[in-house]
Amino acid sequence: MEKTMNLTIRVWRQKNRLDVGKFAEYKLANISEDSSFLEMLDILSEQLVADGHEPVAFDHDCREGICGMCSMTINGIPHGPESGTTACQLHMRHFHDGQTITIEPWRAKPFPVIKDLVVDRTPLDKIIQAGGFITARAGSAVDANAMPIAKGIADYAMDAAACIGCGACVAACPNASAMLFTGAKVAHMNSLPQGKAEKDRRTLAMVTTMDGEGFGGCTNIGECEAACPKSIPLDMIAHLNRDYAVAQMKNFFKPVA
Amino acid sequence: MCSLCSFFKSTIGRKILMALTGLVLVLFVMGHMLGNLQIFLGAEVINAYAYKLHHLLPAAALWGIRIFLLGSIAVHIWAAVTLTLDNRKARPDRYDDDKMVQASYSSRTMRMSGIILLAFIVFHIAHFTARNVPGMQYEEAGVIEPTMVPLVKHGEVVVKNGHPVDTFNVNDMMVDGFQVWWVSVFYIVATGLLCMHLTHGVSSMFQSVGLRNALWRKRLDRVALVYGWVVFLGFAVIPLSALTGILKKDPTGGLPVAAAEITETLHK
Image 1: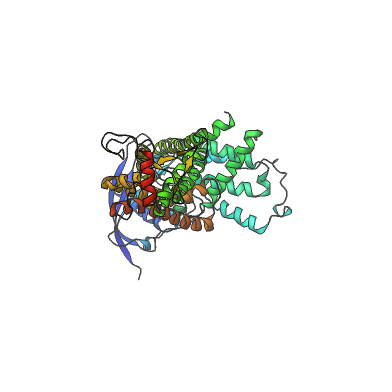
Image 2 (image 1 turned 90 degrees about the vertical axis):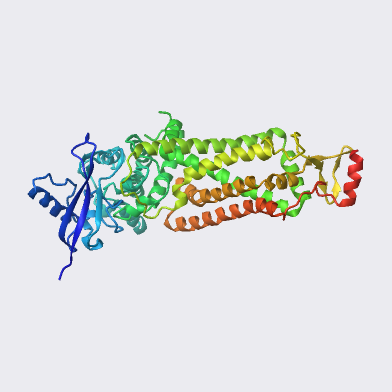
């Protein structure tokens, strides 16, 4: 027989960007341990609607851990207590009967709260727009397998490309730094032959945009790596630092942009 | 924007400067510690070492090195302060349930340990280099100049141009200075904080310039831990030995007794 649990949910309620926002506490009964965290929130929302209240707004899309939409800090940890797991892939069996669960939105100046748990993550898109692409004529791309790429490099780029851009790294960082996100994107593009041509320009542009969007700096404490649902390693930040130093050096003698 | 301006303005550029200046200071503390430990080899050795530091290079070069070191500290602090302000601005709100998954205590308290270390450095320079801490002038009341003793080599006074060479009696300055219990406690606490600061910093500086990966992170974290503890023990053992009487004053500056008497009469 499946086990069920009774929970107290403390969730952040905020009407809009300008609202101050505060915690609200709700009781939930008979939650199956097999339900996912977002299903639990769905049940909570249905209960709220039935009682004539507004449901809790939260971002979600694929619910299979690959789209990067779900974004909530559960008991102080972005995406909750399980490592390498998105909130949508988190199951209630990792919680226990009678537990109080605190749910907050990502907290970072560049991510203003739109409503409840939904934040505006446009600054990450702006970083991508600054350099997260390769310049090629549309329709002229050669077949991917026409360009030989060493296995090690392909694997490394794939590990970097695993970043789903959810922003948990920013949320986990006490400085709201987007270095792990930017590092993953830079490492992904800069290590493949297609991206190499624009390596220095890309690195400088993405870092300048990252700083300009108001993200903080890295203090190398590693909380982003621990919170990342795709377990992107700190190596990506080292890669970004390395490429940035090289790009600045080259740019000093001959502008790369 | 000029390329250098953008480097200094960027978060990564400032972290690279922090790493490079950190490296200068990391190497300096090791040299300073090894130099200081010579006090255990006797007054002759430590006094000769101090003399060498002051006279090996022309005064201009000595000041050049001092300015380079103080400049490194200044750049290190400038980067730390401006980055901290930016970081605070980027994350104004804390989580209600604020917790860390794995960040070490030392990595999260770099600012605290850094600020106390700065206060220590100011005191330390006033204490031993400028020698103007009230009540700690290593002499009878009111005399600010520290004891001068003859420079000794192989048990004999070094004579230059027919005169015995005078040098600071560093041995007695250190033993005297550390016999004040709260001074010693401050030195030991400060070197303990230095140990913490280095435990994170020595590994972190490699990350900031991009010379680290998962494997080397583990290794460098271990190196940093050992480095921090070696520096702590190497520095802390001196005030501890002075307090417990293991280190003793030597007013002759390391001369064997008979020779000491002769120089004393010569001086008169």
